[in-house]
Image (cartoon, rainbow, N blue to C red; front, side):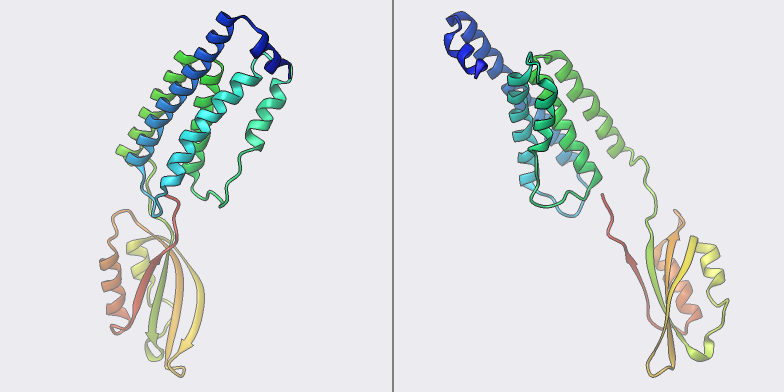
Length: 227
């Protein structure tokens, strides 16, 4: 209530200055969040792109700049900060770790603008955006994800070390997950969790295994990854 009273009872010059600074903070937060979301679009490698998520980053950045403008200079600023984060809810869980980073990124830029640290807000936007783009450009930290390999082997060819050579040549690790009989017990289906070597091509691995299992069915499936 004190803020509202001060807003309406303060001098005209002071009120206009407050309004101008608040509007400038919101405008800058919007512009900087547009840069953030543009980098997000350029570096997106997932399977499910969401336009609403992009809009959410921009809206949150602008709204948080206003909230920070209101609570700054107040003795309860710590509670205000807590309220900013506690009010944010998503109807669906964010499963991509990179998306969570962009949400926090937008929030931090909005908070900085709301505190009128405009130079720091610009630096806070540009430097991480450059880092994010370079990580994407050079594909830093990439590696082979765990795959599920299913191999059907005739009962008469089944023996303990049939696929050892293939695993030694093409994989970094392999773990037997399941064994089951099929086709009235004449076939055995093995399920492995494997991690292929960086130089391994899936077709080469499949062809090598088909030479061992009488050209019966072999499948490789990829676990869902967080791009």
